Image 1 (spheres, rainbow, N blue to C red):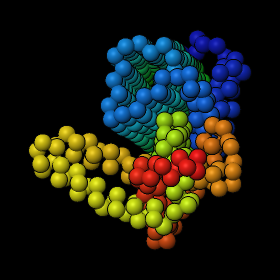
Image 2: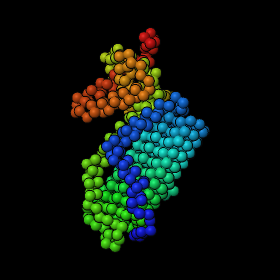
Image 3: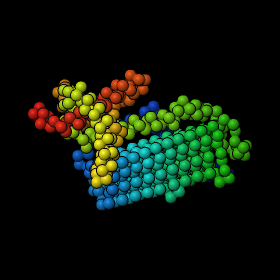
Image 4: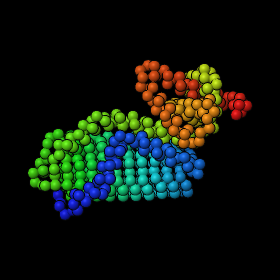
Length: 420
């Protein structure tokens, strides 16, 4: 391992980037990424001037000249987007340039095209193989910054497993289970992990706290490095003044353990996905939801009945179409739509309840209050789900009433038109 003293003073670093990042960590530790994505959702209010696309698979083969809002099972970007990308789905692949920000919530995200601004991501697994000109904020189970990737700004990651093979020009804040740094960190570093492996370089001052820290012969630490691990001082500590064992950093590990990063991570990811989906669904399904809200409050018992029929009969109908051979495509499509409706049922329920409240009390909210109230309803429903047995029954009734109200809105259009 090589250590160098030919760098600016620790005080200089602390006065600029490192001090700023420490402040950001204190804020984000309390709010995590919920406020971050609520801010994202609020910014989506300019969606009327954007390109909004939905479907099972969305493929962008021609340039998009404005912001792109996309919600689908799979989203593939093969042409430039000359604005922001706001996406939600199971898998998102970005293979061309994004000229604005990326705001995405999905299961798998692969970025191989350049990003000209910031990226804020909530995913299960992300792979970055390109350049991001701004900051990258990630909440994930798995994060991989490939060897050919470069982040010009700061990197902030809360993840179960983190591997950095590329270059980070700014500062880093990493919290995770296993963190491996093989690449180059030009700025400062603040890392909290279960297992920390450093084979690369950190040029700025660093705070490293982990149950175990491994430094290889290729490790290069150029700034003052305060560290803590369960086993005590590193063997390299005796040879270099830059390595400082700091008992106070043990609290970083305690906070990480209390936070229960991985299980909590999936819970928070679920909430963030819901918040983003509520925003997208509000713009994409405003009219159907408004119609469904009429039956949700005026004929709730019958809505539950229709919802139960929908839940039981649609899979049977889909199977019958598939067995008929001729109707295989329609049967498969029907089954996919059925699964999607169940997957997003809590989100749909949150929107329908919000629209029902507005209808009942004669409220005329614009986009932001509607989205904000829907998010509150969504969080309340999530809390109700935690109640054993009774919570499950309540959610089942709400979901059935929601699905049934959509069915009734299609069957009884004239009745809706007569009441406005």
